[in-house]
Image (tube, rainbow, N blue to C red; front, side):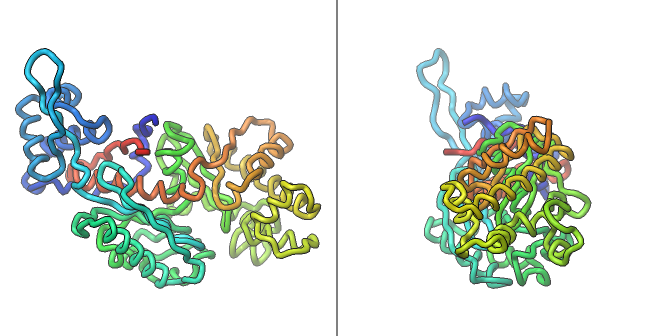
Length: 419
């Protein structure tokens, strides 16, 4: 697959300083040299010392010192030597995959998902467990147990766990660590979620909104690789937006940018449900779709998946009506997103957005509500978009913690996803 967008690192978490050996005594210029070498090794793979010097512009003496530091720290190892060429054989170096590990996790309304990856981005193991009967701190504890089991089953030393990134609905306050704007995730609004997660997972924790994580996931290894202007609209239990512009996440003043469930579209903005959950979410979220189906006389208590399946089959008039109304409302939301951000493409995900026929119905409705050409496509990662983004965030944060200068933070490029 093609490499990740060079500016994607800008959309990920910033570093708090390197952990290369003796970093407090290492001059900034040497730290920058280490960063430059690791950038090449992480993104280009095994490379000779001469090629590293050529690509980074470092002198042979500096390169020798950098390789020594990285080898002694356990970050770089010898892979082999060149052969079949004229002249002296050259030693080939690569990043040691066992130098460290990260966890990407999604703490969702219905499920907990985790992936364990090594420092070069290989997924070592993944796990999933239901969460629909859990709430509050029990969710955090369940995630911690699942992570511990995953690490133990992979035979990895917990001391080598560098960073965990957790994708979850809502917005976590930067100071108090409390969760807000997440009505579907009960019991976490009055606790310091970040501190709890760090205690459970036993390493540094980065928390990201799940829809922001999803757009990063699609940009790393989905249908938006290399696209710097992209929006991800999640249609599911809730409604949300994650967007990159110039390869950077749009966050807003308090981190709440993208809460498009509150757009006054599809219903009465002054209604109690609209004020609590958002007008758009009240009609287009999973609960709203089910309620609309029952209101119009739907005979069975179908889930949104069942309603759209019945609409696809064409044997349920009420389901067809509800699916068409939902597609029209979603199309209006796409027009609003396009008017505000003008992305090159809008990726639709979520448990409703990824259902068969949903995106096709939205595309049918779009020309009826807009004369602009709006590129809309279904998520390539589906239910794993947020989890994939969480892995990317954790991996990038680990790289920057390890290899970027403390005095001059510079986000490293995120290597292309493997597999």
